[in-house]
Length: 167
Image (cartoon, rainbow, N blue to C red):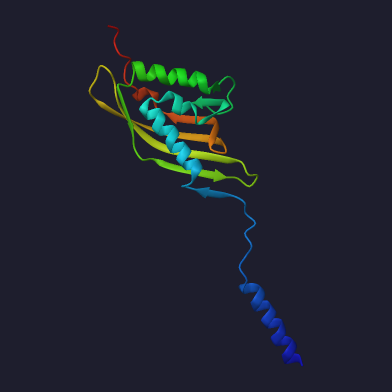
């Protein structure tokens, strides 16, 4: 009888230890899906100067912080203010603009909040200079579905071309 209990205990132990573990972790990192395609569309529309398409990737109340800590006092501006700056840069600094394929990811945190991260390199040329300039860029996004509610970007502005000369 002792052998029977021993074998029964051993069998139960082996059964339990071989059962697949239940994943309680609700976090994830993905590099494909609708949100990734949305971020790629955002970058593509920015690069093409399609400002209406670019704006469509953001929520109505989206904010942006570039080259400052995300919660620094006065750092955040509206996406519409940033859009005005992007348009000025394209009209006065960047005669051409292209982007590499980049790296894109969406992180889902345990509480369900989602953040996108993009690492890209823009290649540009100024209006008064034929030299190609490469600008690595890191962007982080707070996501609401497929829309961006907050953008946080870092890049080296010292590499920007000089503004075009007045005619």
